[in-house]
Image (cartoon, rainbow, N blue to C red; front, side):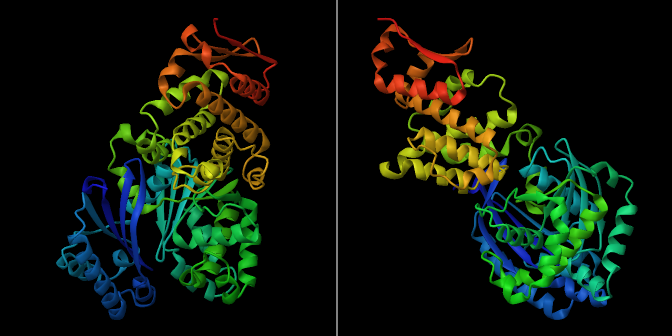
Length: 489
């Protein structure tokens, strides 16, 4: 990947310090490199109001390493930010000066800037987010109203995992009282009641993995994983009842996150009981992605991150340039009135259809399904992944009957719709041969409930038993009353 695509952020947090290098599509950045130092800068601040000398030494040693890496990375941009622990420490300015002396252009984010970046991080991955984004770090909790693709009112509170631990150590009721007091100070919190609570931060992502494990969820992709808000209190009670060994035994739960899990679960339960959201969703993006998103021009921000992430991966693998677009246009008339949230998934299936040649012929259907389910797609909920997976599996000749996990990921109505996309894409492949020309010269439409395939005279020889069979299957999949093929002799 060229240097122009690589952007780095050093995030100096209260628990950890990270160097993350991003690449991919500007609207859907992906992590190319991610290294973490568990410095624990916030521990001293909670106890004494200053950064502890030992944690500062650990932090500066790690940042010295980061600086050496960065000098050789040929980056297009670098941003170095420090958040709550450094912001609140009496000796924070001295620490920032020491970081800058390493050649790292450190800047201190105030609580408002941190909240805005976190809110835009949620929007970057979930443009339709409507509710409150809650970013819990080690030192602070940022609450941000997100709606209509924009960040609204926000606030920062000293309710990070380190401070939650201290509050809970004071006895029962302390945390709930602190959360209630914080929320009551907000004049806008009621606006989000009955909407979404979007979780940002490593401790909450780990908590979501615990819920995923306990519920035996069949897709281990944490981005946009969610559950009803009513689950928060039972989940907190379950986590409190588990010891560290049990939590560490859960696959994908990192041992370093285990000590903060009971506190993260307790805070989530208290927030849910106070804010009264309808559902909880785990955001794959956060402060770092929000910082990148804020730098994008408006036209780039407006793009769909799922389509952009799929297009970035699929474009270099298309059999013939322009085929994916021609395919999407050709099958669109068969799905009139399709809402935008489904049309985007159909477009993604068309984009990914051209990547199948890279797989072994015997495993193309399964390979396509695997790519859809586990690809690094931004802005895709589990149900979105399931729909695209089924469409591709059917398009490449699979029946879809053996994909037992899909009904647990998406409603049957969506899966039936996706099967129709798959049958349409499969018919198009027989007509177009993987090239856009034949598709542009022919057409597919619904005429008074009948599926109609039209071909010009020079393409009439394309009609064979396979075309007839696939047209019939498509008609059945979309509920057409009949089908006909119009091809002049």
